[in-house]
Image (cartoon, rainbow, N blue to C red; front, side, top):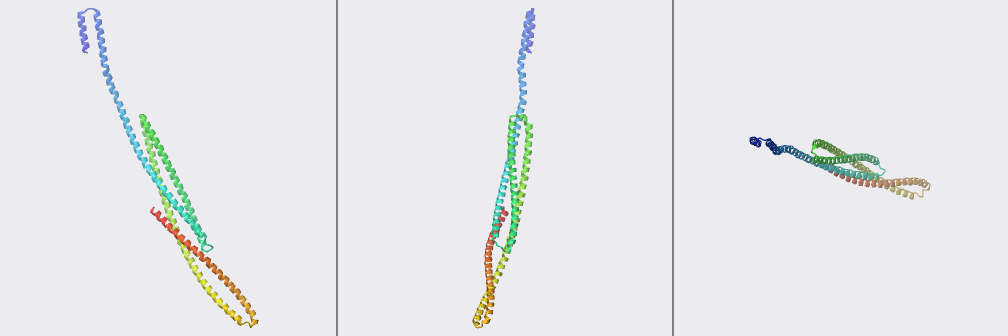
Length: 357
């Protein structure tokens, strides 16, 4: 403005000095040049103000990007912690499956011992107690078939657990891949933050559903293991009762054998008496050689007596053979009792192990 005033003063003075029109034209050109210079000087100031206004939203966007990246990193850290918890639960499930396999090994050992007892019981012979033992063996076979069915059920449960764990691992792997892809998309493009937040919420819901499924699977495994332990304890108690019954029956057999031995001793005494009577009769025959008419009748009587004695001797031989066979059966029964006591001790050890576990 001061330049314009000066120019105007100069123009007025020039008009007073010079009255020609050419001087007025030169002064007009100078005024226009001064105005252009003032506009050129004012232009950079206006542009500097506009640049300061444009820098502020960029800084705001940068701060927003930093805050979003920090929140996403915090979410990723929380998800990594949850994945660690899931891995611990998976390890616990593996340990439980190992315990179930150990129980299966113990059940297989029990089946082997039961087969051994069946083989020993088949060698008992044609005694009357064999029928009852066969009935007991059939009951044991039914029990073993039930055990095999339950074992197959346990194997099916273990396979379902393994499939569930595999599905959980697959889902965790897919979730981790999706999270990594979404984090890369967030880093490359900030405009998709709202969609990523919704995806993260969906992932959190899926992780919660997986945790609920894991809790249900753990409850089912605990219930199945408890049922198996209760069934095994009941079966062991039934085996103990059957062993006690077999021991009572063996005691009865021993009593019967003692009675047979007493009868054998009585029959042997009778045989001795008969032999002494036979000697007396022979002496009487020697004295009665002179009595020929009576000798014939006496011979007939002696023949009858000989037949009777032969029959008695054959019966005594049969009794002796029966006694020997029964003594052998008694020895076999004693051996089987010893084996049964060993099985009983093994079963008690197994029950103690199951109780401690």
